[in-house]
Length: 92
Image (cartoon, rainbow, N blue to C red; front, top):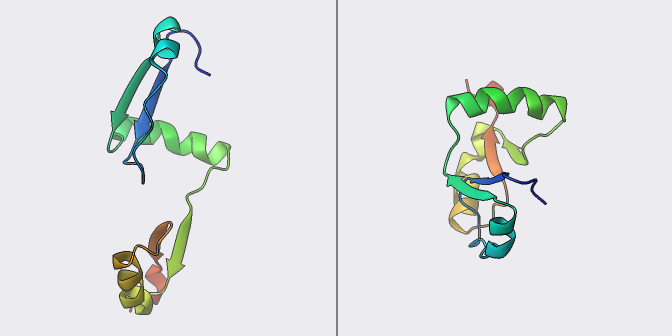
């Protein structure tokens, strides 16, 4: 799906191991594959306006601070699909 001389960048650690890429497809298209656990500040500055323009939002679970113990237990049991976001308005 990449154009000639394109690059696939995998950011973050996947929940399951990524399958091996089609090496022949990468080679014949003169494509590259790269990875990073985090993006840098420059990449973040470029990504945020694009995400806003395309209405790309994160998948999160919101919780008041009073739910932090339950969130921790769910995390330990691996019952969390997305990230928890604790609502600052509930912290007093």
